[in-house]
Length: 116
Image (cartoon, rainbow, N blue to C red; front, side, top):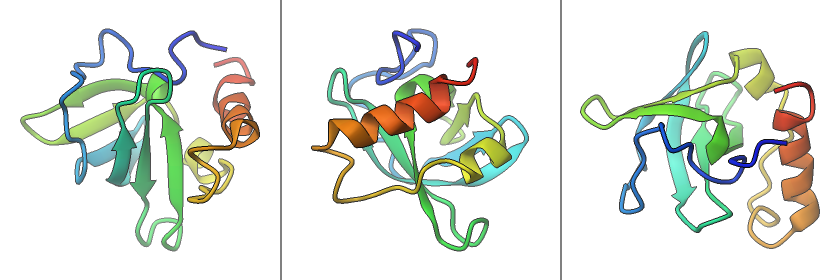
């Protein structure tokens, strides 16, 4: 697994004070939604994306390590996964995402366990 899975890549353009709420999120093959919430906690950084009607209102949690770049001027975040990969990800569980290491391991295994 990537050493940056739960942290922003040094080249992403993220700084600790960034408020990414409302930023558009772009997969490698198109728009997937907007950031609903995010974490800047070291070792536990992620974004939660509200996919709107694209996946019928499903929210997805993406480890910060999937973020390749952030365009603050355009308020866009680019991630290194396809729409299909994100659509098939484990469902976001708002009750487990903070305190359940098994949930984070499952999510990390999904995004980084298949050759990423």
